[in-house]
Length: 131
Image 1: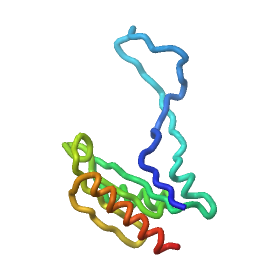
Image 2: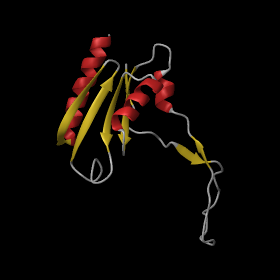
Image 3: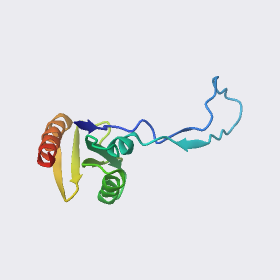
């Protein structure tokens, strides 16, 4: 009933996958990348699909990008956080900004395990509010 997409597989992949290791021979190497399918958007678009929660890790314009993803993918909720410059990665604390159609909530800086617990409560609350 609830689908939580904690991370994208990868936004892009090589157009051509080699069958051997690329040996270091040239000073430069150029790869052509193609977009991967958006699994979260596909699940959210299913008829009578599950309650869908996504994540947005952004280096800038956090709110604008998170709201755009929420709408474009047809999500029920998105948890957004700023990354870079010592934020989010390689630290034990984080801050989350939750968005859903018609509302939002900032979860202040706390231990990541604490944030995860609060996030799961909010997901359950929003799920029950819709059902």
